[in-house]
Length: 375
View 1 (cartoon, one colour):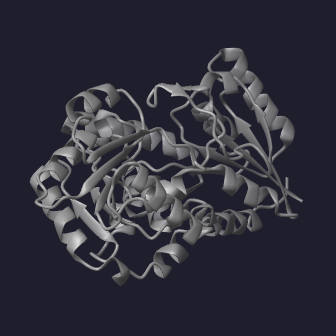
View 2 (cartoon, rainbow, N blue to C red; view 1 turned 60 degrees about the vertical axis):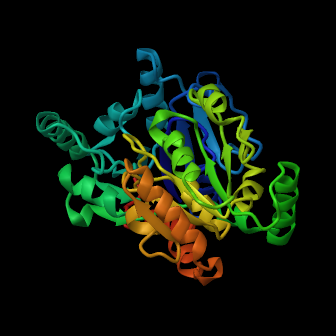
């Protein structure tokens, strides 16, 4: 039986379904190593609250946790992975305590695979960009294969010195069934929630869901919505550093609705409340935008900024949404108006659902494992 070690920071709702799928493979022995303890990640500084997910994020796969923020913790992490005697190691991200050390320690001993979603869509001064490239080229010398999430991510890896044959495409995905199940029940719940907010049945609704922080630019979206000539409503789902400021500036408007942080069980209903989902992020750091995957799993069209990593792969034509410059509110107003005026049932969602499916990542990992000789 092949043995795969996976190094990640902590239980994440997006990764858990993938870990469970791999863990259910009878030909694989999978063990996930977390480099942070539960106490270290209990409070989310961006959401400014303790996060307890209402879906299982640690069930269905084997895992152990270490505190890699200390020297002894990093020693213990490396020793624990070594004791597992894996045939290959999959590392999520390098810029976390213990992760770069794991890349360096195991490279040359066993195949080292990498998963990240960085891109080059955010501009940087030439000298800083040059220094970054030199350093990252050294980092990625310790990687044998990178599972790329999309077009922008692949360009980043090539820029960092990886060869095309080292890249295996495995698109960023979510557990689609979680969002697609009970469609009619959830649509009914969404309309009920809208009614409770005072939103008329046939009103258009612009939806934002995410951390209320500068990077995601909810204030730009509010300004763009406010310039619309119709009587549309806007729903802001989330919490974060900008929450009080946004509520102070916009909370008194009758067609603006702040519904706070919503856990995963509520999100399929939240997305169905919207006519259009918008992610106007300016970066840096909006490496993909998995909320777009979630919205599209609910058959909701999306508008994203040109700094969002998924824009090159998920939104290529008007039937699924639009890509708009991150810094031009007037173009956001135009894009929203145009999308609202086009029939929502014109979009064919099947190609999106097939392309952005977690099973592609599972298949890519299994294919690589088949090429590895047991230790």
